[in-house]
Structure formats: C-alpha cells, structure tokens
Image 1 (cartoon, one colour):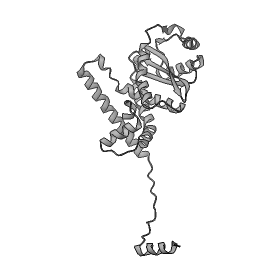
Image 2 (cartoon, helix red, strand yellow):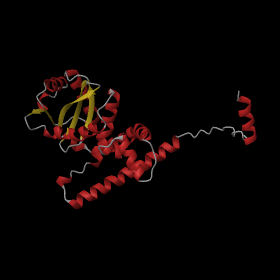
Image 3 (tube, helix red, strand yellow):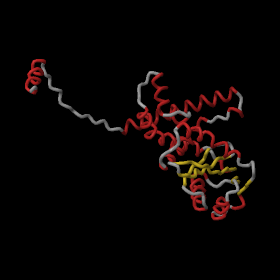
Image 4 (cartoon, one colour):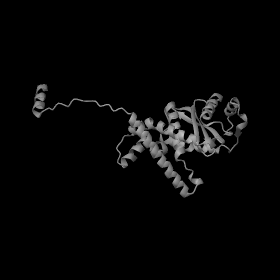
Amino acid sequence: MLYVRFPLSLRDVEDLLHERGVDVSHETVGFWWHRFGPMFAAEIRKRRIEGMRSSRWRWHLDEMFVKINGEVHYLWRAVDHEGEVLESFLTKRRDKKAALRFLRKAMRKHGRPEVIVTDRLRSYGAALKEIGAPDRQETGRWLNNRAENSHLPFRRRERAMLRFRRLRRLQKFASVHAPVSNHFNQDRSLSSRHHFKRNRTAALMEWRGLCAALGTASLSLRRVVRISLPAPATVLPSQRLNRIRQTAP
C-alpha cells in the first residue's frame, strides 16, 4: 500500500519498514508489488464496478504524454464526473485507431455513457463516429478540467519512480495505481471532517480485509518445497592444520 498509494520509491518503503522493525530489502518490496499488486487492483476494480452504475452519466477523456527511454507514448485515461479513474490505456500513437481501441475497451467494462467530454483532438470525433455516438461528444476550453486534474497523482508517482523504462511495466503500473487511488480518494474538500474520517476508516478496514482474504488464498495455493541438505562435515583443528601443511610448498 505504501508503494502504490504514496509517491515513494522502493528504497523509501524499505527505510519506512525498517523504522517499524521490518527488515526487508527494496528488491523484496518490488517483488511483492509485482506479485500482489495486480491481484489487489483486480479485486478492487471488480467491487467498484458493481456499484458504479452512475458512472455512465458523464465521462471525461484525455491523453497524457509519457516518455519511455526518450520515446514519447500516450496514456489514454477515462474519468467519470466524480473523478474516478475508469480505464487507462497505453499506445504509441494517438490516432483514430488508438482512440477507437481505448473507447471500446472502456465501454466493454463500464457500458456506454450519456455524455463524453473530450478536448479538440480529432481522433475522438472520428472514433465516436465509428461506434455510432457522435452526438454524445462535448468539447470546451474548461470542460475537461476533471480529466486534467486526475493526472496529478500519476505524475507525482512518475517523478518518484524516475520515469519508466518499459512499455509493459508502465501499462501494468497504470492499471494498478488507478484502482488503489480510487479506493483511498475521499474528496476531503467536499465533505465534513466527521464524514471524511469515517470514510477513511471504512476504506482502510476494507483494504485490510482484502489483504487478509487474498493473503489466505495465496497461502493455500503455495506449495512448500523442502530440500534436505546433508549436514556439513565437522573439521577438527588438527585436521585443518594437516591440510594446511600438505598444501604448503
């Protein structure tokens, strides 16, 4: 949770765990993230999709520039009217084909929205015309600020990780970061302190229950392999001295 939720590096998480009495290396933290991060994200996404029927009302679509080894790529993101990140999709281009693949992937999971807010990129209009929904598009100078503001948490994580080096790892991290960020995003500016504390406690309890459930499932599927090694031979000091004399010139 520390590595995905907060803008920390692997070594920062290692130092924080060491302060709490847990002695692990940053490589172990990275292995835990690669192993359990997609499992947590899939379960959170599954639970939230079941109760987010209102997200079909209004979507905000935008693409952000991401560099991988000096090469520019495009991360397409769909956000609902409340700031929930619905889908992330990484491509090398931002043409009609890429926009069409992104829209079909998002609509396959979340359904068709009533209104789709985009910028003035022509790829959106061509893709919406292809799927038969050109009348649902809205464009404006300030209408898409919801999607623009949703890029900020990802940008902070990108700076903490010193950018990305592989296309596949960026897509994996984007798919894991969005559900975890949605789970702990409580919109503290829109609610009172009492409601914010209650929602934050409920989110933390749900996260702990999810960790316990997935941890039990992973332990039940794990196979314990025991390797019997022969006991090391005991070498007496006199024998060690004889060996040194034999090897000496």
